[in-house]
Length: 435
Image (cartoon, rainbow, N blue to C red; front, side):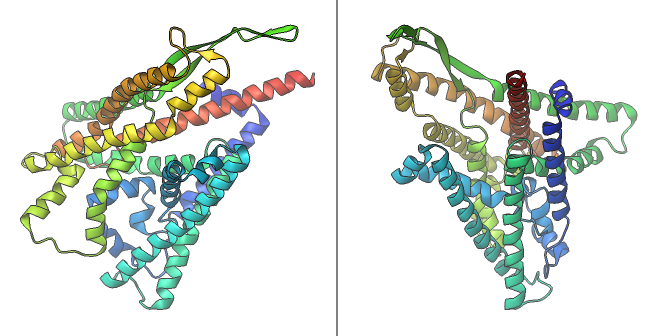
């Protein structure tokens, strides 16, 4: 990785792209420090002192609880992208649009932007009304509410625009880069909390032991994430040799790469979001939970109680979380990889899997392999997600990042490095052709 970056910095075009990306990242982080007008940020920070908001706060780099002008950050765009992916399966017109090459993808991107703005408006209005009711605004009234809604919506739109500029003129996927930086920006504070909790004030032996354990857990989780992200099952494909005119075409071999973690981090995001919705709604609308049963139910939905001693009732939340991750892993895989379409394309192109007949048998074989690797992928995904949660519950290791964050970090870094490598390859080809 470091060798790739060193070589890339020698190329003016790529170096300028990296510098442009760094400039945009600095702008985003500076915007995350500017407070929104009319909001008592300290009171809001205390109000949002709940485990349910850790997930959102990690994705916004702390901007959400600080209620900066970039408080919503890329979350409306991510939600909009997920909604569009689901609607693409449900609405035939969107499915056709997706298959319509670059023009179709540009139309879907435009629709995604509009949905992102609508979601930002809805979230801003909901937050502002909730703050006004709880007395968290420095000045109440229509003017203050309008200014806050416009500020938060404009901030989210600006972050989305800056992300697109990175994709256009910088390196990597802009939205992913901003999400990565938001998550990483919280890590120094998290490691400081771990140091204060387990190492500060201890004798040198206990301090070294505690730091070694923390480092080992982080490194082990990161290694597991890298292995899971890179793991794939390659299905060999052969193409029949045909005679076209005086030339023979085909007769070559290739493969279909099936990623073990086909759903990526999406199953974790879906499951975590669903579990956090009840607590977020209760906090925003100040609902008083008087029933002991419902109080325990809400505790069970919080990941901080899953492995905590003295809270055996919380394990139902853990079981529900695992079931949700499994369900969404299969669901997301089903909408991102279509075995029937792949089998038909192979048949049309004269390709076949050795030992498997084209058509329906190929489709059945792909389904069988896909179901097998999804099981492996989802088991790895659950283990990675639960490692930080286990230490958080058992030892009260209060950190905002976890397995989900590490999967995003590793995935974005790998994707960005591959994009830089592809740009260098294209440049080398262009240089060769121009000589």
